[in-house]
Image (cartoon, rainbow, N blue to C red):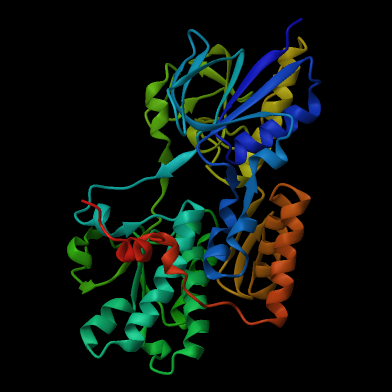
Length: 439
């Protein structure tokens, strides 16, 4: 029997964990696993706020694919089309003409992208917070703004440089805001020209609460803690415009800012538009509880999906509900999906995915956090410690676990690095300036 050709589209939480498990559970003569992703690494997104704040090295929040997936074939490129009727995927590699890859089983897990809105000025002045590149950029940008504010003699320039706006009060927005403010506050020790009162940190949230994944009292606690730190929390407020960096809010307020971070939700990858797979009204791939792609009740043989881009029924909730797009579900769905693919290859029946959401943990800066796990609510240092413990247990590979723990341990004894490496974003500028033009 020829080995089954398994194609994994995307190497995020679902793709990486599924590929790892397939390689461990299937023999080489049973399956060949190919993983396609534009990036050579998987980003562990829950660590992005800590990487941006300098609590861990940015390199330690990503997992190199070629080192971890030694038994898989890695293709560095983007899947541009899936024709499941022919069981064929088209891949655009980094360089060269498109490739066509045939498969017997496909795992469709390209993940999600920022869910943006047609807000004037957002495209020109906003920055997302989903990739390691965005996290590094935000860190360098915030520290650069402190340098600008410290040297300028113009009050308006200083006010604009020290105004930081975060749009979206979910986990990404709250953690990014809290960690960056914590880092900037720490950095002010080295800026005698500036005070904490000079900074203006603004959270804009369209609903009347933050952290919708936890109970209202925990969300209220989070708001209270941020207010105690002097942060400006705008609930039930929308961003109407940010043309030329002038932020205009639905509550009528208006002010200038050099930093506008968009963390207001995600949507399935637009790559799914170029597939013939069934999707729902939110553009998610429709799945059965077994994580098999389905058109209604009909299984689409050989197609699987999970994570942010998939509509997976939540068997622990009321009928008609779906699993939330969280790392907690993605990792467990990946394991169940890999086991189901193995079962199908060996002629057995796949089992449904069923996991009751255990709860959520969030960091609010060093030694500060909020957690709600199995109904138990924790705040402060204990919640912060639980946040770190949980996520270090989830990040793949012993190598990364050890490196992250070492980063945290060193932070207890050494001061946080608060230097901006802005030249990373335009490394050729200086060389270009000193190189003569020819012709």
